[in-house]
Length: 448
Image (cartoon, rainbow, N blue to C red; front, top):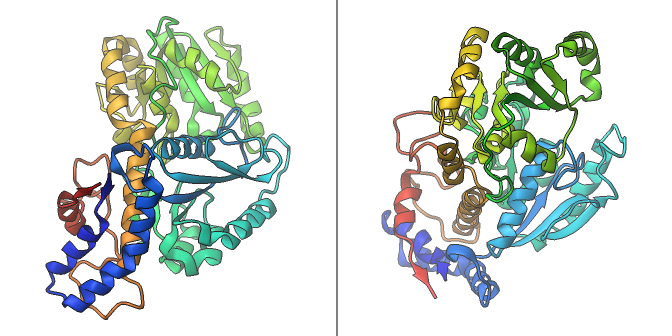
């Protein structure tokens, strides 16, 4: 079963009274894509009829995919790649050689660079991008997770490139790069993440992260402690976590890595506080250790003091049924349902009160909300829809086509789409989210 791409494209032109000759050229232009999708999907258990995409996932080389220990971006790349493979797509993963995947692994370095004590990752990343560029014809979509380095190398291939931005976007020095290379579509991981960006940036979608539904099991919070999990850094505010636990008289476990850049902060600001008998410093942990730590925690503390782009640890907690106490910075209000999957607080006093009252939240309900909103299956569905729209738009806009009349909704200015805004734009306006695409999507037909 396949979505009828011809019908989707031609529906857009019927509304604009385009000539029969132009329609024929449009149809012929996407024929190869459709025919290959049908051929590739024959005998394949492609989930929910999605057409088969040849996609390259280009990961950072700092950590393995998935990481052995800490590593948010590489962990998301792993979850996305595996979900796409399970859905029947042809996935090639460019990553470190110690990665583990069901996709086709193309090892770009023998080992993840951080644990190999390689400080400068740029040379290895540039060599990887050169390899991807040489092989670009092998893929329908090239999906980057490596920040801004691909822009000048892949500008001529913008029609098949997409970049997920995993970091903070409020640092203005990078904004001219996004404006200069606006032909390459961008995916944000939260509506909050994209707010500082200038106008004219080429947003394709907002897609929240997701993780495998069976990665973590629900826990009962039997340990009765609060948990700080992730990375020791000033903007993560582990000092707040320690103060909250101390004033609430509840034990605190700190399971976090300390980067070289934050060693001085750790020694001067955090280490002196670890003598508190309520506080246990666990250090950096792996996924197996996370299961026990999260599942047995009374609550996860997320006392951030910066515009958090997403906050992967929040949905890891929700997967175990553990509620989150968070400051409403960045994406936290998008991820959490206040007084349902966690509590949003603005002061230490509010956080202490929340820690004392957190047991009243229903852990089974929290797990259920995770399953509806934050699985890797749902994340992959969002990306496949984005890939599909890119492929169709390129097919429609090939230079060989008969010139078409101007459109009221330009195909190369994609609408802002969020999977988590209930059909509304991620910029919180009152306009409908998908414009023409939403109406087209409702007219898709399935063909055998």
